[in-house]
Image (cartoon, rainbow, N blue to C red):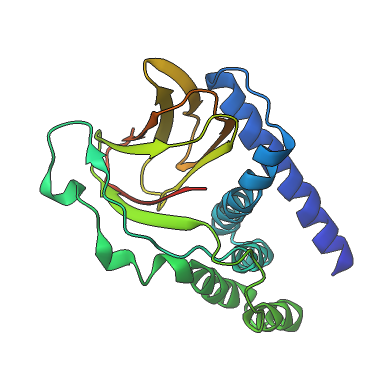
Length: 233
């Protein structure tokens, strides 16, 4: 069990490094200070849990799914109400989808249910899953605030955010896995941060330098609609 958990820790570290490396290829060179790293930490936990869950499903590994659920439960994410603006002429199914409000925060339970099926009666993993189900939320009070929307294929949503100069700024996007997503953050006409690598789990973190509004675009690069969660600090 200990060896298995150590392996998961190494894997988790590798996934985080890989995600940051992919982001740096498409974004301006940015260095996070300690305050920004602290602000990004709960969103990085959400990102890591999502990546572990995706990998667990691909490999049919109940340990990965259960560990993803444990991480997700350590950082609860309440759903907020936020209406994105369509970057193109609005389609009816591009509007915010409130029907998922009760489902997304319980995604850890979905992962645990999948892990139980994959465990095929293995007492060790089933005991691990039982222990996770008994966990209480241990994240910061309130956790990250997330909004939910459905983005049609090939379209984009725009969120307008205000970040104070010199303060940490974080944007996190987690899709449902049906289509790749790209995130671009601009201040005026200048590019602040971009995450456009493979997949639909994206994190941008930086220290705000410019006063005023920031434009955050979430674009669906795939051929299918994607229900996604969007959060900022």
